[in-house]
Each structure stands twice: as C-alpha cells, then as structure tokens.
Length: 212
Length: 147
Image (cartoon, rainbow over all chains, first blue to last red; front, top):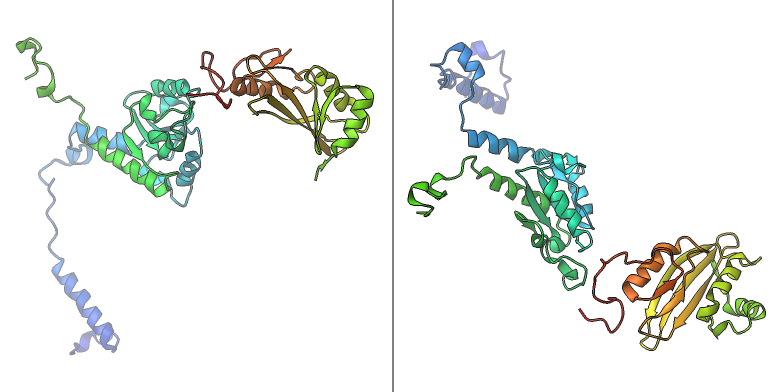
C-alpha cells in the first residue's frame, strides 16, 4: 500500500491503520453532496412554526403515548404490575408510568386480579368515572375468565361481564414482558382510531334511516 | 414461642368454677356447653394466671351432625394459648352467644361465620353479612350448600 509522503506524518505506519484512514478519507470525499431539504421552498417563518400532519395522527399519537392508568388491583397480578413499573422492566419507556389515584385523570384500566361480586359495583363505578376515551386491559387468567375461581359463588367470571375489555393478557400471573406486550397491542389499536366516524357507515337521512 | 397450654389444667379449673360447663375434655382443646360459653370465656379472660386477653380467630366447622365454633385464645401477658370450642346441634337455626363484648376483635369474625356458615351469634350488635350481599341464597361454606 502506497502512502503519500505528505500524509506520512498523519497516519501511522501500521497497515490496518492505513486502511482505516483511507476508508474514512473515501467516505468523507463522497459525503460532500448534501441531501436536499424538502422544506426549502418555505419561508423562514413558516419553516420554524408549522408542522404538517393529519389530525388523526396527532391525536392518536398523544393518546397512545400517554396512557395513564386507574388503580384497580384487587389481587396478586398487581404485584406483577408493580414489577413492570420498577426499573428492571421500566414501563415509563412507553409513556405510562404515571398511576392515577383518581379515575378522572386516567384513560386506561388494567384489571389486575380476581374480582368478587362484592367488589364488582365499585370497579364498574371507577370505570364509569373515567373520562372518554378509555380502554381496559384484562390482565391474567382471573381477569379474562375468573381463572381457577371461575366456578366460585362469589367471583366474577371475567371482567368483560361488567365492563368492555380491549386487550386480554393471559398468564397466572402474566410476566411483565407479557403485560408490556399487551400495552403495545393496545397502542397499536389506539393508533387505528379515527376522530371522525366513517361517513359511509352512518345512517343516511336522505334514505329515511336505511343504512346502505 | 407461645406455649399451648394442656387442656387438663384449664378443664379442672373450669369444673371447679362452673360445674357441668365442660361438655367434652379434649387433649388440647376445651369444649364447653353453649349456654355457659360466656361465663367460661369471661373467666378465661380475667382469671389470674390465665389472662387470655387476645382472640386470635374465630372459625366454624360443619360436621353434618353439628356445627362447631372454634375460638383460639392467647395470653400476651403469660405467653400461652388455648383452643375453646362450642357445638350447636341444630341445622335450622344454630345459635351461639356472642363474645363480642369480651373481645372486640370478634365483631367482624362473628359476622364472617354468620355469613358463610349461617350460625347466629346472640347479642351481636350488628350481625349482618360481611363478604356476601343481602339476599344471597344460603350460606356457602355449609357442606349441604349447592350453587
């Protein structure tokens, strides 16, 4: 490998170092052309102050990235839920580390545990107090179907008997990874929502209520 | 470690104090008659050398022929414990005197036994269901209860 005499002072004489130096020189040389700015046609003021996007995208982004949870942990799945909040699993990476003691500030309910009929009216009341839009994750076997207590006289066989459920996370109890995966599924679901309803699905007043 | 007192000693004391109150002498438990429960319990709580001032729990067992209510008593002062039992032989309306006046902790526990086993505690100030709701059919921990 030949090295210019005027660059001998920069590079060491070891061959590997020479190779590396030459590759870097090559990349540098080919990177002179800048990538054209797509917003180059905008005025300076506009460029700094306007983001162009769709309303759906922004609203869904805001909703899915700040899922705040209401407190509803009747049983042992709550321990696993606390573990997923802890630094090892670190749920706050997904923008939902804040637990709300007041359901008025929450938009997600993670139902971690067995629910008795005695407790059921209170859980439904908490759910009703949450403002729209709101989602529910049924966590664990008991939350999905009552689990091993399904045939008991005082256990609700699944939260979906009393409140609508969006995502089911199986396990007894589910690992924190499973819960995080469930939350990500919910985020994907939220991402598909639309602010305006699909007009073609609404009843058409011109056709006297016929939906076609 | 709390020492479990041998029942013989307490039974002899109870026999001296209340003749005929002890129904059956167990090896490590005292079975008293239902109508003398209150007197015997008060004696166990206050007598010198016994001083069972702490009620660990109340529970009930369904033996088909009779219900048995079990009281676990501990003395924090003398560090010993004893098991006290009462039986009621009727299934229709089994009744046991309430010991809530002696140990306040008996309040919720007697309500629990009433709720799940259907044993009425006479003299309890607020005897109503605690785990289930008013109108629940029957008492689910009874052996003959069916959903």
